[in-house]
Image 1 (cartoon, rainbow, N blue to C red):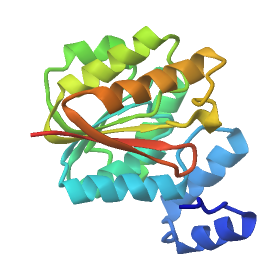
Image 2 (tube, rainbow, N blue to C red):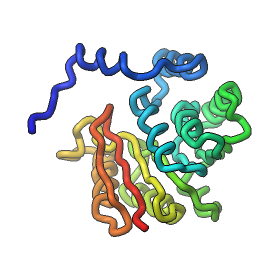
Image 3 (cartoon, helix red, strand yellow):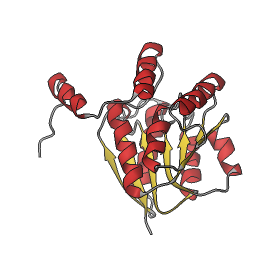
Length: 214
C-alpha cells in the first residue's frame, strides 16, 4: 500500500479538521512559535487527549513538562484526573504552573522541578498512562533505558506508555548521532518487551504508543 505524501495542501486540510483550541492553548501555541519552545502540535495533542480518554486513564505521569501544553491535553482527557510531571528548568516549570492554573487545572497538576530519572524512584504511586517527551534530550542509551524501565514499573495492566519524537525526523533509520541512537534504542525496547503491545504512529515526528498487557 502506497503511503500518502503529506503535501502543503494536505497538511492545510488536516489542520482544518483539528478542533479549534481555547484561549489558553491558542496563546501557548503562539508563545511556543515566537519563543521556540518545543511543544507537541495540536494534532498530537488531540491524539494524546483521545488515547487517555479512550483508556479511561485518571492518573498521568509525564516526563518533560516544558510550559504545560501537552499536560493540558492529557489532563483534559482524564476528565478530573491528576498529572504528575517533571521539568528541570525552573522558569518553564513556573510557566507551566501558571498555564495549568489559567486552564482551570492548577489543583490537578503537580509539577516537580527535578530530573525525572532521579525523581521517579522516589515515587511509589502507580499511573494509568505515561507520556515521555524527553527522547530528544537524554544523554545516553543507558539513561533512555532507565527512564523506560522506571515508567513501565509504574504502569499496571492496561496502562499506556506514550512517547514523542519516535522517528527523530527519519534519523532512526540510520542513527548517526546520540539522540537518534537513543530514540532507536527506545523504539526497540518497546517493540520487543513481552509486557507491551505497541505501534509507532507517523504523525508529526512520530508518536510511540504502547499498552501494557494484562
